[in-house]
Amino acid sequence: MHMLGRHSLRSLSSKCVRLSSTAAKVNSKTQIPPPAPYTGLFSSNFDVTQPEHKARMERWKWLLKLLGYFNEEASMTTKSALLYSSCVNQAAHPSFYRALDIPPDFRSQQALLILHVWIVHRRLISVKIPHADKSKVDPGKVLQEALFDRLWEDTTIRIRNQNVSELTVNKHLHEVQQRSFNQCVAYDNYFASHGAKRALSDAISKHVLNVEPSSKPSQTALLTAYVQRELKTMQNQPLEVLETGDLPWGPPLANPSNIAYDDDEFDLIGQRYGNWRSALDIRGTRYFWNLTTRFSSWEKPADTSK
Image 1 (cartoon, rainbow, N blue to C red):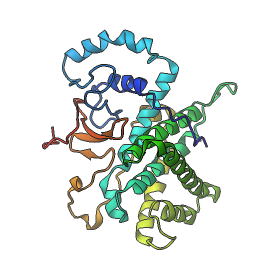
Image 2 (image 1 turned 30 degrees about the vertical axis):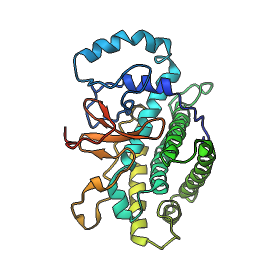
Image 3 (image 1 turned 60 degrees about the vertical axis):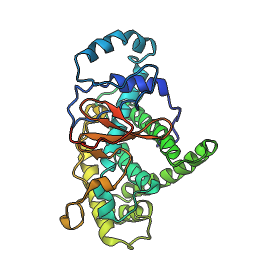
Image 4 (image 1 turned 180 degrees about the horizontal axis):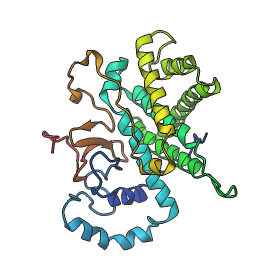
């Protein structure tokens, strides 16, 4: 498993990838977050639903070509970024934290994110192309490695969000990578034990719930059943679907007692608020972006339904 992928931030290339992901996509489709307000080589904070957007993109197309946006590597970066964004979006449901009774801190958010990345990872390493040329690189493996590259890039930014000294970011990243590696190995034991439910439950207790096995039996059972369901769903998805990032995730865990809760009490990275989502810029500063217009703002709008 490729765990320690390159974690260069590729800030300029990333901004071009984000800029070219237009809002022609339906809101339910996975999108790469646009740049934060007033950042980048040029101002890119504009409403992409307006007619002038297409003309603006045509005007800058030469620059995107010059930067290599349309080459094979950039295409893989885009595909892996969409796939990673899908994992972020699914893991950022407040109901997970209520149902599992865990705090929405860095550790819990990272643990749930790693769990969803692992689910996709298991599908990617099982991708088999009929009559494929064995001399060529396995496309599932390439996408899987790129997925972990996006994970470590984003994890670096999430660490900065914790207001640690920049000099210690790489040290913290190494610690998180080691913990994440151990988490994935523990989950892999589920397959090594030929689908023994106990192996998965014990891994979830330790790495997500942060408790000894059997200490939280109801929460462990909930998340174990969820993971088994998602593994089965992802196993049926062709590589072409994975490359779009539009994964058919099932519903997250239900809120306890089916009571109506206010999700605004949470502040999760990637959380959806009506027609807006949160994201982090390269410095680890939170901002919000609109799923339709792709306009970004430092402040969460009072009316998030628009």
